[in-house]
Length: 288
Image (cartoon, rainbow, N blue to C red):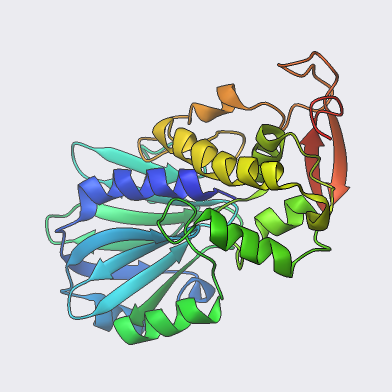
Protein backbone atom coordinates (compact mmCIF):
# COMPACT_ATOMS: atom_id res chain seq x y z
CA UNK A 1 0.00 0.00 0.00
CA UNK A 2 1.34 3.47 -0.81
CA UNK A 3 2.33 5.30 2.37
CA UNK A 4 2.17 9.01 3.12
CA UNK A 5 5.09 10.17 0.93
CA UNK A 6 3.82 8.17 -2.03
CA UNK A 7 0.25 9.50 -1.72
CA UNK A 8 1.57 13.04 -1.24
CA UNK A 9 3.60 12.67 -4.44
CA UNK A 10 0.54 11.44 -6.34
CA UNK A 11 -1.49 14.35 -4.93
CA UNK A 12 1.00 16.93 -6.13
CA UNK A 13 1.42 15.38 -9.56
CA UNK A 14 -2.27 14.93 -10.31
CA UNK A 15 -3.15 18.31 -8.84
CA UNK A 16 -1.09 20.05 -11.49
CA UNK A 17 -3.16 18.40 -14.20
CA UNK A 18 -6.75 18.01 -13.05
CA UNK A 19 -7.47 21.09 -10.93
CA UNK A 20 -9.84 23.31 -12.88
CA UNK A 21 -11.24 20.47 -15.00
CA UNK A 22 -15.03 20.10 -15.26
CA UNK A 23 -16.60 16.65 -15.17
CA UNK A 24 -18.72 15.92 -18.25
CA UNK A 25 -19.44 12.27 -17.47
CA UNK A 26 -18.63 9.37 -15.17
CA UNK A 27 -18.75 5.62 -15.58
CA UNK A 28 -18.00 2.71 -13.26
CA UNK A 29 -18.28 -1.07 -13.63
CA UNK A 30 -17.58 -1.97 -10.00
CA UNK A 31 -20.39 -0.92 -7.67
CA UNK A 32 -18.37 -1.53 -4.51
CA UNK A 33 -15.92 1.21 -5.53
CA UNK A 34 -18.59 3.90 -5.12
CA UNK A 35 -21.10 4.76 -2.39
CA UNK A 36 -24.07 5.64 -4.61
CA UNK A 37 -25.72 3.81 -7.46
CA UNK A 38 -23.96 4.55 -10.74
CA UNK A 39 -26.95 6.61 -11.90
CA UNK A 40 -26.93 8.74 -8.73
CA UNK A 41 -23.14 9.15 -8.66
CA UNK A 42 -23.08 10.19 -12.30
CA UNK A 43 -25.92 12.66 -11.80
CA UNK A 44 -24.23 14.28 -8.80
CA UNK A 45 -20.75 14.74 -10.31
CA UNK A 46 -21.73 15.87 -13.81
CA UNK A 47 -20.89 19.53 -14.32
CA UNK A 48 -18.79 19.81 -11.15
CA UNK A 49 -15.32 21.31 -11.27
CA UNK A 50 -12.26 19.94 -9.49
CA UNK A 51 -11.20 22.81 -7.24
CA UNK A 52 -8.30 21.17 -5.40
CA UNK A 53 -6.55 17.86 -4.68
CA UNK A 54 -5.71 17.25 -1.01
CA UNK A 55 -4.47 14.40 1.13
CA UNK A 56 -5.50 13.10 4.56
CA UNK A 57 -3.37 10.25 5.88
CA UNK A 58 -3.08 7.80 2.94
CA UNK A 59 -6.22 9.03 1.19
CA UNK A 60 -6.69 11.58 -1.56
CA UNK A 61 -9.48 14.14 -1.48
CA UNK A 62 -10.75 15.71 -4.70
CA UNK A 63 -12.48 18.93 -3.65
CA UNK A 64 -15.29 19.67 -6.09
CA UNK A 65 -17.52 22.67 -6.67
CA UNK A 66 -20.92 22.98 -4.92
CA UNK A 67 -19.46 21.54 -1.68
CA UNK A 68 -18.87 18.01 -2.96
CA UNK A 69 -15.78 15.86 -2.47
CA UNK A 70 -14.47 12.52 -3.67
CA UNK A 71 -12.51 10.58 -1.05
CA UNK A 72 -10.12 8.20 -2.80
CA UNK A 73 -8.24 5.26 -1.33
CA UNK A 74 -5.89 3.38 -3.67
CA UNK A 75 -5.40 0.51 -1.19
CA UNK A 76 -2.89 -2.13 -2.38
CA UNK A 77 -3.13 -1.94 -6.16
CA UNK A 78 -5.15 1.16 -7.04
CA UNK A 79 -4.02 3.64 -9.65
CA UNK A 80 -5.17 7.03 -10.92
CA UNK A 81 -4.24 7.95 -14.48
CA UNK A 82 -4.87 11.32 -16.09
CA UNK A 83 -4.87 11.08 -19.86
CA UNK A 84 -5.23 13.65 -22.61
CA UNK A 85 -4.18 13.71 -26.28
CA UNK A 86 -0.72 14.94 -25.30
CA UNK A 87 -0.13 13.72 -21.75
CA UNK A 88 -0.37 10.68 -19.50
CA UNK A 89 0.13 11.16 -15.77
CA UNK A 90 0.13 8.07 -13.57
CA UNK A 91 -0.14 7.70 -9.81
CA UNK A 92 -0.14 4.43 -7.91
CA UNK A 93 0.35 0.78 -8.71
CA UNK A 94 2.28 0.06 -11.93
CA UNK A 95 0.31 -2.04 -14.39
CA UNK A 96 2.35 -4.12 -16.81
CA UNK A 97 -0.07 -3.54 -19.68
CA UNK A 98 1.17 0.02 -19.78
CA UNK A 99 -0.62 3.33 -19.95
CA UNK A 100 -0.99 3.67 -23.72
CA UNK A 101 -4.07 1.43 -23.74
CA UNK A 102 -6.76 3.10 -21.67
CA UNK A 103 -9.26 2.15 -20.51
CA UNK A 104 -7.97 -1.39 -19.96
CA UNK A 105 -9.27 -4.48 -18.17
CA UNK A 106 -8.25 -2.98 -14.81
CA UNK A 107 -10.11 0.31 -15.37
CA UNK A 108 -13.16 0.34 -13.13
CA UNK A 109 -14.11 4.03 -13.15
CA UNK A 110 -13.63 6.87 -15.63
CA UNK A 111 -14.16 10.59 -15.23
CA UNK A 112 -14.52 12.31 -18.59
CA UNK A 113 -13.81 16.04 -18.60
CA UNK A 114 -15.36 18.60 -20.96
CA UNK A 115 -12.06 18.98 -22.83
CA UNK A 116 -12.20 15.21 -23.56
CA UNK A 117 -9.33 14.37 -21.23
CA UNK A 118 -9.94 11.62 -18.67
CA UNK A 119 -9.14 10.50 -15.15
CA UNK A 120 -9.08 6.70 -14.92
CA UNK A 121 -9.32 4.68 -11.72
CA UNK A 122 -7.61 1.32 -12.24
CA UNK A 123 -7.37 -1.41 -9.62
CA UNK A 124 -6.08 -4.93 -10.17
CA UNK A 125 -7.45 -6.40 -6.94
CA UNK A 126 -10.53 -4.15 -6.58
CA UNK A 127 -9.83 -3.00 -3.02
CA UNK A 128 -9.75 0.74 -3.68
CA UNK A 129 -12.69 3.13 -3.74
CA UNK A 130 -14.01 6.56 -4.80
CA UNK A 131 -16.61 7.75 -2.30
CA UNK A 132 -18.62 10.89 -2.85
CA UNK A 133 -19.42 13.14 0.13
CA UNK A 134 -20.68 16.64 0.83
CA UNK A 135 -18.38 18.83 2.92
CA UNK A 136 -20.34 17.97 6.08
CA UNK A 137 -20.41 14.26 5.28
CA UNK A 138 -16.68 14.23 4.57
CA UNK A 139 -15.91 15.85 7.92
CA UNK A 140 -18.11 13.25 9.63
CA UNK A 141 -16.49 10.38 7.71
CA UNK A 142 -12.97 11.49 8.59
CA UNK A 143 -13.97 11.94 12.24
CA UNK A 144 -15.16 8.32 12.32
CA UNK A 145 -11.70 7.15 11.32
CA UNK A 146 -10.19 8.63 14.50
CA UNK A 147 -7.07 9.78 12.67
CA UNK A 148 -4.09 11.24 14.48
CA UNK A 149 -2.30 14.38 13.29
CA UNK A 150 -0.33 14.68 10.08
CA UNK A 151 3.32 14.00 11.01
CA UNK A 152 4.62 17.02 9.11
CA UNK A 153 2.03 19.41 10.54
CA UNK A 154 2.39 21.82 13.44
CA UNK A 155 -0.04 19.66 15.42
CA UNK A 156 2.47 16.84 15.63
CA UNK A 157 4.75 18.10 18.38
CA UNK A 158 7.21 16.34 20.66
CA UNK A 159 4.85 17.03 23.57
CA UNK A 160 1.97 15.41 21.67
CA UNK A 161 4.09 12.33 20.89
CA UNK A 162 5.14 11.96 24.53
CA UNK A 163 1.51 12.22 25.62
CA UNK A 164 0.39 9.50 23.22
CA UNK A 165 3.28 7.22 24.19
CA UNK A 166 2.37 7.57 27.85
CA UNK A 167 -1.10 6.21 27.05
CA UNK A 168 0.25 3.16 25.20
CA UNK A 169 3.01 1.84 27.52
CA UNK A 170 2.57 -1.80 26.50
CA UNK A 171 2.52 -1.26 22.74
CA UNK A 172 5.43 -2.46 20.65
CA UNK A 173 7.14 0.59 19.21
CA UNK A 174 6.45 -0.44 15.63
CA UNK A 175 2.78 -1.07 16.37
CA UNK A 176 2.49 2.34 18.00
CA UNK A 177 4.01 4.06 14.97
CA UNK A 178 1.73 2.23 12.54
CA UNK A 179 -1.44 3.03 14.50
CA UNK A 180 -3.09 5.89 12.58
CA UNK A 181 -4.88 7.08 15.72
CA UNK A 182 -1.46 8.10 17.07
CA UNK A 183 0.00 9.61 13.90
CA UNK A 184 -1.03 9.05 10.30
CA UNK A 185 0.98 7.83 7.36
CA UNK A 186 3.78 5.90 9.09
CA UNK A 187 3.30 2.42 7.64
CA UNK A 188 5.47 -0.65 7.44
CA UNK A 189 8.30 0.91 5.46
CA UNK A 190 8.76 4.09 7.44
CA UNK A 191 8.19 2.59 10.88
CA UNK A 192 11.19 0.31 10.24
CA UNK A 193 13.28 3.25 9.06
CA UNK A 194 12.27 5.45 12.01
CA UNK A 195 13.19 2.71 14.48
CA UNK A 196 16.58 2.35 12.84
CA UNK A 197 17.11 6.12 12.92
CA UNK A 198 16.28 6.16 16.65
CA UNK A 199 18.47 3.06 17.23
CA UNK A 200 15.64 1.14 18.89
CA UNK A 201 14.38 -2.34 18.07
CA UNK A 202 10.82 -2.23 16.70
CA UNK A 203 9.71 -5.00 19.06
CA UNK A 204 10.55 -3.05 22.21
CA UNK A 205 7.74 -1.87 24.46
CA UNK A 206 6.92 1.83 24.51
CA UNK A 207 7.42 2.00 28.28
CA UNK A 208 11.11 1.08 27.86
CA UNK A 209 11.89 4.17 25.78
CA UNK A 210 14.28 6.74 27.19
CA UNK A 211 13.75 10.48 26.78
CA UNK A 212 16.58 10.66 24.25
CA UNK A 213 15.07 7.81 22.22
CA UNK A 214 11.66 9.48 22.10
CA UNK A 215 13.28 12.64 20.76
CA UNK A 216 15.04 10.63 18.07
CA UNK A 217 11.80 8.88 17.09
CA UNK A 218 10.09 12.27 16.78
CA UNK A 219 12.93 13.73 14.75
CA UNK A 220 13.14 10.59 12.61
CA UNK A 221 9.45 10.65 11.68
CA UNK A 222 9.66 14.21 10.42
CA UNK A 223 13.02 13.87 8.69
CA UNK A 224 12.46 10.51 6.98
CA UNK A 225 8.99 11.35 5.67
CA UNK A 226 10.13 14.77 4.43
CA UNK A 227 13.16 13.24 2.73
CA UNK A 228 11.02 10.58 1.07
CA UNK A 229 8.60 13.18 -0.28
CA UNK A 230 11.53 15.08 -1.80
CA UNK A 231 12.62 11.87 -3.53
CA UNK A 232 9.03 11.05 -4.58
CA UNK A 233 8.54 8.01 -2.39
CA UNK A 234 9.74 4.46 -2.10
CA UNK A 235 9.26 1.98 -4.92
CA UNK A 236 8.89 -1.77 -4.59
CA UNK A 237 6.29 -3.82 -6.46
CA UNK A 238 3.31 -1.58 -5.96
CA UNK A 239 4.08 2.09 -6.38
CA UNK A 240 4.83 4.64 -9.08
CA UNK A 241 4.69 8.39 -8.70
CA UNK A 242 2.39 10.69 -10.64
CA UNK A 243 4.64 10.60 -13.69
CA UNK A 244 4.74 6.82 -13.72
CA UNK A 245 8.35 6.86 -12.48
CA UNK A 246 9.94 4.93 -9.64
CA UNK A 247 10.38 6.81 -6.37
CA UNK A 248 14.04 7.24 -5.44
CA UNK A 249 13.85 6.88 -1.66
CA UNK A 250 14.33 3.10 -1.92
CA UNK A 251 18.04 3.80 -2.47
CA UNK A 252 18.15 5.48 0.94
CA UNK A 253 16.53 2.66 2.93
CA UNK A 254 18.64 1.38 5.80
CA UNK A 255 16.70 -1.71 6.91
CA UNK A 256 13.28 -2.11 5.30
CA UNK A 257 13.29 -5.03 2.86
CA UNK A 258 17.00 -5.59 3.43
CA UNK A 259 16.92 -8.61 5.76
CA UNK A 260 19.77 -10.99 4.98
CA UNK A 261 21.91 -8.11 3.72
CA UNK A 262 24.64 -6.23 5.56
CA UNK A 263 23.80 -3.16 7.61
CA UNK A 264 25.03 -0.06 5.80
CA UNK A 265 26.40 1.31 9.08
CA UNK A 266 28.03 -1.59 10.92
CA UNK A 267 28.04 -4.51 8.49
CA UNK A 268 25.92 -6.78 10.70
CA UNK A 269 23.36 -8.90 8.86
CA UNK A 270 19.88 -7.35 8.93
CA UNK A 271 17.31 -9.59 10.62
CA UNK A 272 13.53 -9.76 10.36
CA UNK A 273 10.77 -10.47 12.84
CA UNK A 274 6.97 -10.61 12.77
CA UNK A 275 5.22 -7.91 14.79
CA UNK A 276 1.44 -7.82 14.71
CA UNK A 277 1.41 -9.88 11.55
CA UNK A 278 3.80 -7.56 9.72
CA UNK A 279 7.42 -8.27 8.84
CA UNK A 280 9.86 -5.87 10.41
CA UNK A 281 13.55 -5.54 9.55
CA UNK A 282 16.20 -4.28 11.96
CA UNK A 283 19.91 -4.31 12.70
CA UNK A 284 20.64 -6.33 15.88
CA UNK A 285 23.83 -4.34 16.42
CA UNK A 286 22.73 -0.75 15.76
CA UNK A 287 19.31 -1.09 17.39
CA UNK A 288 18.92 -1.91 21.07
